[in-house]
Amino acid sequence: MTVPALDLTADVLTLTRALVDVPSVSGTEEPLADAVEAALRGLGGLEVVRIGNCVLARTDLDRDTRVVLAGHLDTVPIADNVPSRVETVDGEERLYGCGTSDMKAGDALMLRVAGLLGVPGAQPAHDLTFVFYDNEEVEAVKNGLGRVARELRGWLYGDLAILLEPTDGDVEGGCQGTMRVVLTVPGERAHSARSWLGRNAIHGASSILAVLEAYEAREVEIDGLRFREGLNAVRIEGGVAGNVVPDECRVTVNFRFAPDRDEDAAEAHVREVFADALAAGVTLEVTDMSGGALPGLSEPAAAAFVAAVGRPARAKLGWTDVARFAAFGIPAVNYGPGDPNQAHQRGEHVRVDRLQPAEDALVAFLTAPTSTGDTA
Image (tube, rainbow, N blue to C red):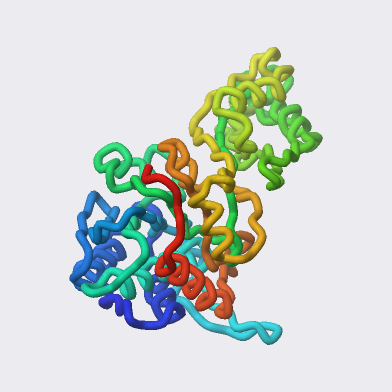
């Protein structure tokens, strides 16, 4: 597909629209990555490398500190919400489209910062690294930032990492862990006209659903931020034919856990929740797991950014790649203009009046001399 050139001198609304209008569902990011790479190379003040559909760029100004800005280029599947459109609803101007909130508005901010501070003669207070990556919205094994961590880890090092995930202009600390398991309920196949000769696996899944319906999500306060957990069925599969009692039913369950649990503790909790089902012959397979990240807002670099934004911090209810930076010992926060409650919705949108203030706050932080602590 032919993708128009990205103009990094355009305002953040125009740039967000340009990104949204290039479809980039997970696994199809190449055209958008091509456009981002070309735009960054054209600035003349950045070292740029490409790894798969990840585009990396950085300054080399011999500053004492480095700030890493990161954002994913992919979106969930399009739901008749591309191309973008601007509408006024209840007096509020909104940009609608797949990825507007999660997280092409954040990517547009990164590109605006690059356009302002990644050109010859620019004087940011810190050296800057920009990381645009693919496949964040799918299973962790495909995550492009993970590929960068394995093959070009040095590009991720800095004194502070800012993930431009949707936060509605607040700073969100840490993130939840996420785990997916498949619970397989066994049965015995039979003709549906003589169902008493079999055992219906779909009916057997009712006990699992009852446990989930009665589950009380834990809330925990960590470093002054409140995290809430969640355990939910997200898919049910079963059935052979319209006249056959099914001999297997699979229930996929997603556990979002607070960052005071590690992966082993999260799995142990899920196995405890479904202990009766497992004792009755149900099997449990972990199919995806990513640990969370503690807020870490007391770290000098993170605290300086929270102070610069000037708005109260809150917990990130969701998994983001702050966890990957935290695993490297790099302070990391979530900050972006999108509304996290709009993520993945058919009517996904970003408020236009959130865009420029977020850019102004980010640029002010990156150009004002501040202490971000020792180099990681």
